[in-house]
Length: 171
Image (cartoon, helix red, strand yellow):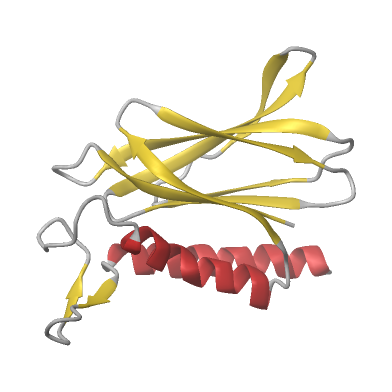
């Protein structure tokens, strides 16, 4: 029963994120108290972490408060066209894990692949096929193993070839 609620909650979360990502995040200009949106047309520095952190905060709150799950890793980094980033994590059999990745306003489609270490090689075990700025994988390990998560952007907003992303691993 708990699994059904988790899946339903994640479906709702994806819906809310997709709607939110289609509307640029709001930021308050501290000098003028005016609201503006993160987009390619405003003066937010492309090196600013504020947009991706603002996008990740409601997800963090949802995972912790609504799902009552524990976040065991949060990473933020840059992602560029025709390249990928990797994150490693040892996962344990006593937990069911969610791996969630989200891109900022510059990333239109983000995905990931999950590999498991076998001997000295990495074997692909799952991947996402998302058409949005977020993607989710779920895994329930049967034994303690090392996992590799490869994050890549399939599409960027016009005029951009890079952006920030966040990966959250929770159980």
